[in-house]
Amino acid sequence: MKNKIIIGLIIVLNLFVIGYYTNLQQEEKVLSNYTTGFKGVVVEKFNPREKLPHTFLKIRIQNDKLINVYPTTIIGSYAVVGDSIIKMENSNKCIVKKSNGVVEHFSFEGQYIEFLNE
Image (cartoon, rainbow, N blue to C red; front, side, top):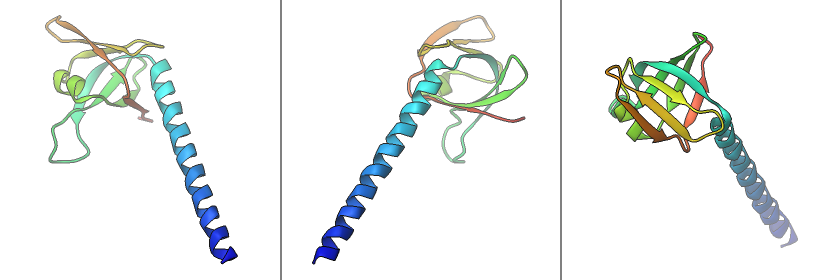
């Protein structure tokens, strides 16, 4: 009986530690995305899932590096290849400038930025 209780406590403790660690990683990712700023041009729209709308963006930033941005569907649906995107540093503000000069402001909360080695 004692062994079952000890095993149960170990399992519960492990679940708590895993949940805490996962939440901590998510908070660090959100903070990193908040502090990161970039300026670039959309070079590709894609979606890793083939049958869904292309709302993910590949952006060439000023120093000729590529980043993948997984934005909300609002930004992903609005931006097209050739549009300029500016994400303010230490801010949740994002500006999309169309090739015809139209400028729109968006919130960049909860987005994911992936820096590529290309």
